[in-house]
Image (cartoon, rainbow, N blue to C red):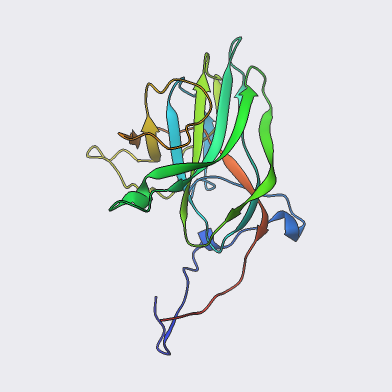
Length: 210
C-alpha cells in the first residue's frame, strides 16, 4: 500500500515475519499459510508436487525436509527440493521453473524427520514466490505430516476444492528435474508438508520510494 508521504510500505501480514537460526530458535516453515494446520497425509508414488511459499524479506535457507509418520514398504524412497518461479511468461510467477535445491534421496521405510542440511546455504531474494517440491517412488510412505489448510494462492476449483499447489501426475521417480515440467495440474487434496529453515532472515520494516 502507499502512504501519504510518498513511500510504499511492504506487506506486513504474518508471512513477512519469520524466525531464523540467527535468532537462536529452531523454526521450520512450510508452504504458503500451511503452518496453520497439519494432518496425517498419504503420499502418492510418481506425483511431482509443488507447494508455493513467499520469501518475505529474504535471507538464507539452510535445511529442507519432511516428516514420515508411518514408513512405506521395502524400497520406499522420496525427495524434497526447492524451485523458483517462472518469471518469463505471462502469469508465470504461479508456475515453478528452475530447480534450486534437490535434498537428495531419502529412505522412507522408517518413521523419522527427514532433513537435508544445505552447504552452501541457499540465498533467497525478497518478495518472490518459491516452490517446495516433493516426489516419491517405488512405494509411498503410509502417512506423512501433511497440509490440511493454508492460504490457497491458486484459489479453489469449479467444485470449490482447495488448490494447494501444482502437480505433475505420472512423473517417473528420479532426481528432481532441473526445469519443472509443463502441463501441471492443481493439487486438490492435502499434500505432504515439505518444510524449510531460515539460517538468516532479513527481518524489519523496509520503506521503499515510489
